[in-house]
Image (cartoon, rainbow, N blue to C red; front, side, top):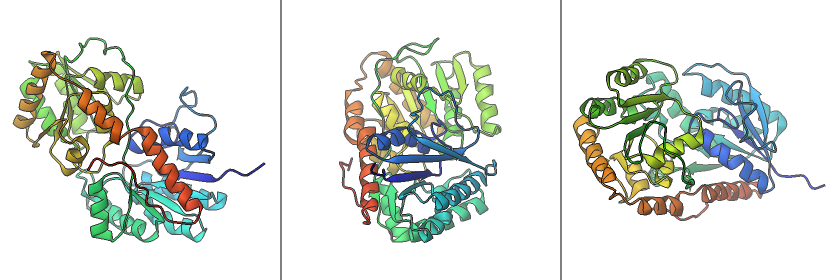
Length: 379
């Protein structure tokens, strides 16, 4: 029987996991690669996945490694242990997520394992990291530029930054979204009747400014907040305080139920997307695919993804509140048409296209050549 080509996926919390964008991508990609004839192993962390998850594709192999479960060292430590195990297993290729794992690329290269590295956003510009962490990410990026076989940038702006700062070309593969079936409205809410935010509670996601805006809108419109810091702290406490102060404001914390999240986006009257650092954001693309009326922070990344289909705002409470109120008025009047934004998501940001591009890149490396996949872009 012919041996299948093997790929190890390193740098996420595991399969299937619901923590963030990398994990969502792996949930879509791993079964796709199996369908395309790959032997897939996903490295992860103990306790990050559920053994009884009915969405799990049992054909996808999983390995958990040890590591330090701390805010600053978890990615590095788990990445190192996964890389060391992969060195022993020697897959044909490795897909590595996050430039922090760039430190371990020399180990894979010495073993003769070519790598595809998703560089994600510009981690060293995120406000949540201190000076040391930013320095580590920046150094990890230099290792990635030096030792990664093929780099993947999830937006054209990310590609430009890497080309200018590290003199490395990359392949454009964004994140994807699926157009869902019609799902029921969240209990206690009405179709197009509420403001929604879905975000990790970190400063660069404009969470504090959004909370300030809610102080201006909390008595006017229902608000649903999804997300947390993951470690507790001031922003979590503020979300709790807002939900206690205003009867119409609900804080759901972290939501791992895909269908519930899709339904929240699908029926929102206004979705606020405040992410400011990074490339193509998975939550933004999925909100588009759900046909949500979007108010997004004005960044080059969000502008690239949304085109002319949404409202871009400056990161101030007054600007956010004004745009959300205007969007809600249109939604409540029944005049919002989701067709253009859904069409854009389907054309440029489908999971089938994303997974196909990754498979093509991996096949190129399997044949011993670098890959520059050309696919439809939103430019």
